[in-house]
Length: 420
Image (spheres, rainbow, N blue to C red):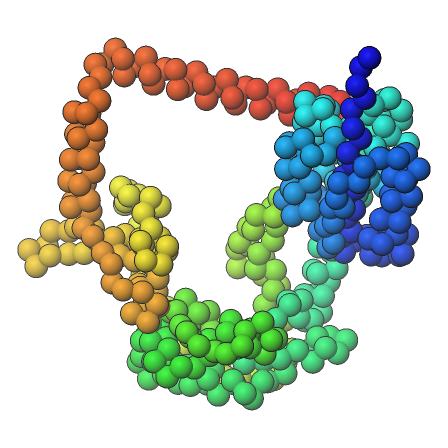
């Protein structure tokens, strides 16, 4: 007699901000009630309820979803129960990959109640790829509407950010008008006065740090209650530079500086200045035009432009981090008295924020090259290998990488064909 496999079900429920517009029918509690009733009717063993509240279906890096997949991989769950396929996800390529490749390999059954889909019986499975495609279209349409709405807001001079620039607060009226926050506006005026007086951004940051003035992020955190006190304040020169070049302080609203690459890719693209949406005179300025113009002249005069066409990337760029703070080590070219040049790698946090943030850990590039060379020689001496063996090892590595890439491309192609 064949022993029947235990039906261990994981209920997955998801709600995004876009779904809220459709009302109570998609709420977390509504989904849970519908699915729980089906679990009881089927007599299944409920392992857990996995919830992602406020997460888009276009992104699969959701905490609840990832926890569920870990339980599937470990064998704790062998049935995934969802209200419909749009709850599982809206990216039809990724949904197809999970449905057609990942879950079958793991021996996991998938049941979408309102879509009439059950992979154990293939009920309703023929039309699921088309439903997944329409779910993807819905996500794309929402993205277009959101982008159009944000652009229209920006063109009307309505502030579209979550937090007002340092020195301002939001009025929360129809236009989200920026109002001067007198609690910190005097700090902004002082920063501009110091810069016009000849003090550089790094020195300004060091002075504010030494005085314990709350930085913009700390000020917002304390104000919102996410931080108890402004201890450990550090003003980086980048923070000071952003304040010194932000047109909000002369009453202008400049938006559309960045955008997402696509509705499926949350990577940020920085727009050119020609693509910015600038509306002048939208709110009361903190800085007068004379101070602003003089400050911009000084900032431009001190600006250093790197000749990227002639200079090669530094040898260890992007490969080293500070052992204390974890920041990337930044390559700093130096010139000796005789005119010869060398490169020194310095803690990036120290370079940006000064000794209040980290120590001045540094190492010269030629010293580092010697250390790496001796280390490599030591490894070679301990593990001798001839040229033929080295070539064979490299070829095996290349073949393995090529095979992995080919397999990944085949999986994506198979998923696309299934979806269509």
